[in-house]
Length: 111
Length: 121
Image (cartoon, rainbow over all chains, first blue to last red; front, side):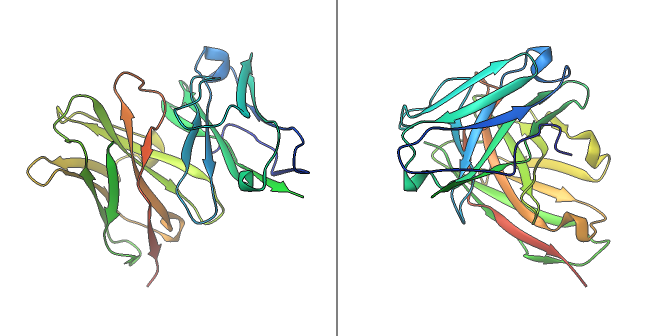
């Protein structure tokens, strides 16, 4: 039931900048619901990375930034590091489904 | 900070009821500061919100689960529980409990480590 679409994978060399897109619709992002991002390291639970479009919880490096415009959102990782290799998920609320919804997930590989 | 730990059977037979418990430490389920949620992650990686319960006893569920799901809390044990009826192989997943601060409402602050539940005869 993933109504938020992400690319399956992105990759980059250490130090590079990568971006992950998250495409929604008029019933979530277009209805003014925020985007939130989670990082899932191998074998662990998802962890909140960005909330309310571009707010980092305490402890999250400022290399991570987010944005939202219209029915799309994106997460940027600058100065890519080996420890950033993980799965990343966007999340919002969908008023048509009356449910919290997640993106399809993107695997980030550090070359 | 609140910490969560899921527990329950790792194997459930088709058509039976899946039951999981989330033990809460560092906070109280009786607190009006949090909503107490369940989320699952299928073997393919997809995340799906199941529902939540609030200290008042009010609950809200993902309509895709229709009448199969129930989330309740036990204040004496400081825990909350998930029951999912009539399970099939499609319900095989890692089940997470998670918190949402009332002040935030829209995103999941803290997650448990997850509990793998396999539906198989």
